[in-house]
Length: 435
Image (cartoon, rainbow, N blue to C red; front, side, top):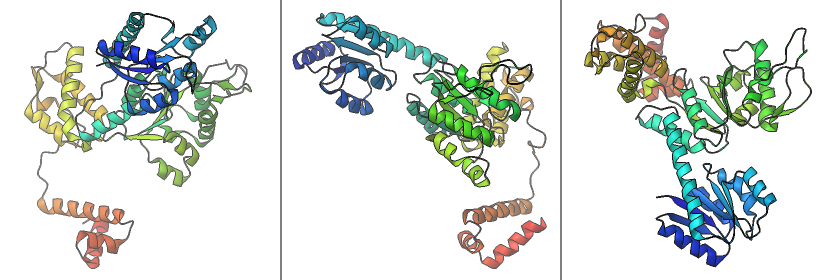
């Protein structure tokens, strides 16, 4: 059921419009106060807002941008004090329509219906076009929920996860669900660009900075009005970290070799596979920049921690590449799926996608066979590990993990493992001797 927010201080008109809206089958949230409406929006989801221009506590025009910040809600301004200047100002601030009183209720209802249709079509298009996050495990569902919650805000987001977990996909999803969706989405891989070129790549360079140098616009200028995705931000050199911090704080910068400050309006989504807190301790990453970019962190789990998603992802990639290669592959054999389920996936979802693409190329029948699952050499070991060797391996991992959890305190680690300190030292000696 569509929900309409009605902000009108004239009690009679408010009640009349509320009645008309409800007769259309719409849910209505109404108030006479602009500030109260903003509080309601923090708790209530609405599809369209109808706002009187002249309110007792705040101007309806000044409310437009603040209301639209909540999921880009269409705003219709109604007023008895309309003029061309006000109408232009309202439209510049993002109003969907500007209607002068008096008007017939049916006229306003018609405009609200049109706004609702536009919202419905836009959302349908966004869902069709936006990247698909595949998976049903609680960890990936939680990560997606967080991404969708933060998307409408302009908050800086930090995506944390190993290589291949899908950080770029999450960044793209956040952009597509934001009010910047129609603006540019610019990707910058901080690890892939040589340090000597990175500053000019980010911020541009003025013509004549050096002999034969042509002027160039940087990625931040290109992204104006949209989103910058800074992938592998943990690899950004320290001098550029300082400049990036200024861009975040001041929303402006100078090109390399330039003196003019260039203002930009961008949202920053950063991603890293590094432990930035550890990098701060090592002196490789600025603490102040970390606090700036980590306003809203989202952890994307590795594939080995969400193994229940492997069959779903494998089927998803199978459909994708079967269609691309015009093959009619119906599914994956049980033996082949068993191999996929037992593999540790150090390259995460990206590696799984590559394996399925390769399997589709090799497939000759209607199903992916186990022989068509090609994994890195040494990973598909079918021989049985001797029990003694397996027990030693498990013991070694348990001991080292316990010591790490106890911050190096071996006495506490021994207590945690239920063994004596002497036994712990004997086991450690075996680890060091490699026996």
